Length: 123
Picture 1 (spheres, rainbow, N blue to C red):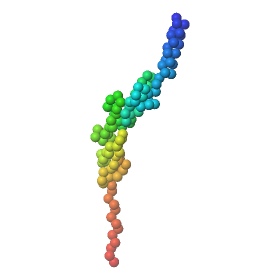
Picture 2: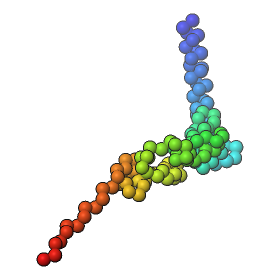
Picture 3: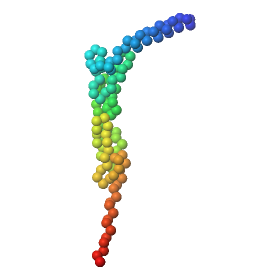
Picture 4: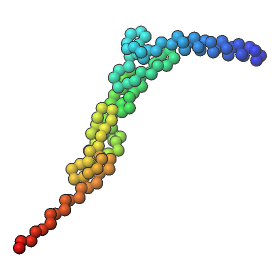
């Protein structure tokens, strides 16, 4: 019995090796029968016998080949301070403290008023 299983395992390994060696990397070319059809905002990932289109960070899947930009600001997916404005960018966002506040946009502190200049008494 052990001998038969070894033969089957070896045949399976050889067949797997043939499949791996004959795999076409569709990610190396665009379109056609042997190329990928991933569109912008995606990254082609070769798999045995096929490929996948992965969404880039900051993008969400629309269909098998397309991804759309996520508006983190409108969706409430940002980490901006409550005292900051969220500005959507391609694939991400940035935060800017509102007028009267200072910081990096993720942490905003109220600006302190400038100290008054010293008074000069008239002689």
